[in-house]
Structures are given as structure tokens and as C-alpha cells.
Length: 62
Image (cartoon, rainbow, N blue to C red; front, side, top):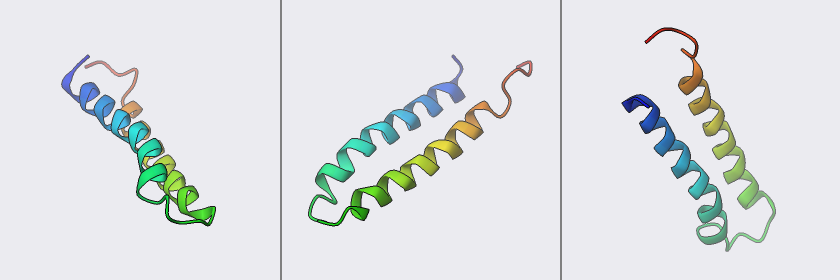
């Protein structure tokens, strides 16, 4: 694992933890369904972007 892969791994770990912590703590006061749904959509889009950046050069020689 090189440094870039470790950084992306840490970013993904933070996104995963945030997807559990934020809806149940920071937006728990929002009684509508779209409170946590909005957070999960934003985190899903962020995950797609990070995975795209992470795997963009897969298969190429380092």
C-alpha cells in the first residue's frame, strides 16, 4: 500500500463513520425523513467521487 491508498482508505473510513454518526446525532432532531436521507445522499455522492479518484489509474504501472 502506498501513501495515496492509505489516504483514500482513511477518507473512506471517515465517510463510513460519518454515515452512522451524523444521522443519529447531528440531525436526530429533524423529524422528517429527508433529514438523514439528505446526509446519506451527500455521503454516497462523496463516496462515488472518492472511489473514482482512487481507482482512476488502476492497472497502470506505478
